[in-house]
Length: 292
Image 1 (tube, helix red, strand yellow):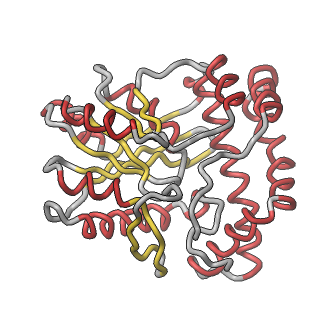
Image 2: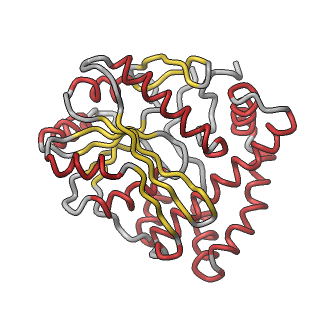
Image 3: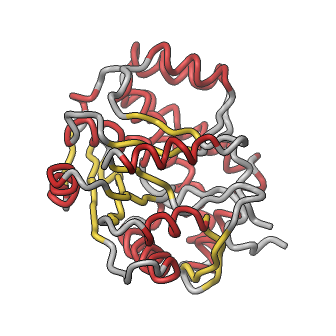
């Protein structure tokens, strides 16, 4: 089964090196250092390389050469998004420019005070969404549901050097206590933001085509979104140039209580964003079970 392991790779030392480089030598130097780091992962992250290659070769139909180049470029852009996250969260937001597209949908949801569901994916730099949300939401009414269980040492280090966001986080836990937190947020007419493209072992899944092949998605996200009779909006934060990000918000269209239709609408939306930014697909595992 091609489920995600639930953990992000990385060592505290690696984060320390990049934070030091950004703070002392600048973002440009960190980007230059990244050429070597990306090449290292290109060579030695075997499973990630295979999964990324199959994405370019089988899902996007690239040639063998273009697919190999795409794997390296994929790693490099991913590294850039990590550098950008570290830079922005440590107080260098003024070094970047930001563009909002469809943000009026979120503002209306907040103004109406009826709650709503936001769904994103691991494309672009979704973790920067909290900083976009900070500008939109002055009342802390947006909650991010996260399955990211990085090593605690890494989290502790990043929290120590980062500017804390006002956005609230709901962490998915084995004891299912996050379900209570999600329900409580929705009952308060707040907005709850999910990622819809990763599921955890043991969780319910739904199947739908993405890029012409069936894949599995977390059922809970789409069942919740389809049953609440509140707006559902797809959101993405995409890197466009070295220091420019584009925030997209698009309203979902589906019939009430039709989770399957919502999921299909979601996969079409992800396909649309990937057609614009093909190198920003950051699920480095066997998403479509191509490697069996």
